[in-house]
Length: 337
Image 1: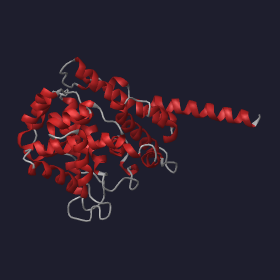
Image 2: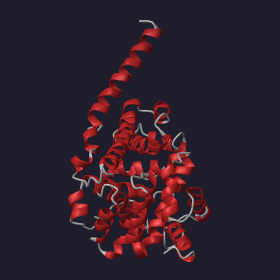
Image 3: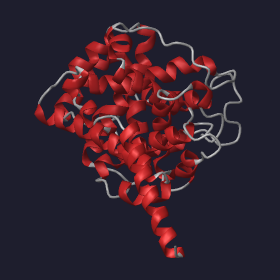
Image 4: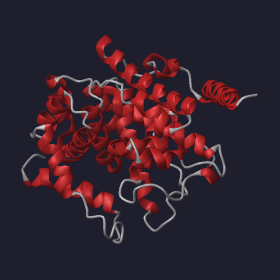
């Protein structure tokens, strides 16, 4: 057989193996339907938006599993409309991390995504790794290759996954989080808080982007957990959207004394969209209501308060939490509490 013939056979085999991987690993798109999850449905537009987000995430996952390479998957991911592209990269990050976990000695896909086309989507890519960890054996969880500051977004993603797919235990019964052996250092105690930040994001979906339903869900949790939960709610309300200005004003009223935490999550979301070049009108509306700043101003606040790379996590409190507190404190000092 000629060289070209062998190359053709190799490409066909790669295509077939990609299709098999996608068939085996990719969850059904029906899993994204709010009714399937038993989530609250506020109205048809809200339902359709949240389902579209879920389907886009799964499409990104499917693309990663099928292509098997960040460079091959990136062009299709970059064609996703700006409002949803971050979710496609989040799903792709999960897909590449799952492939790494299932390919001992032949990994590195997640790291290549993070250092390459996914660099500007680093917030979402770290969250996607958390989804992968929720679906893979613990002995295959990563020990390196994540940003030392943003690594807590991995557990945020893990917490979102658990609340989204194990809603009865995590949301209805509000069971405490089990201790996770990641990360393995003196800041492991912070893991439960990072998980709750992800649970808060999931509550926005479970509550159908209805501020009153979402606030009711948060208020059923132990008061000590509510600051992190409301932070996640603020992030999801800003990044995912689904609520108009009047509804966001209701969320602001219901958050009451936790408004600085809502605003902190909002600022994170504004910066995540700005960094990736995915700014959309609803982000600015949410920022003006929840932060009393434009999305650009909220993003700038997140950038200006970000800890310097040197000395990450040298203190008793993770640098990530120091960062979050700096942002929240800005809103307290401005009287936006």
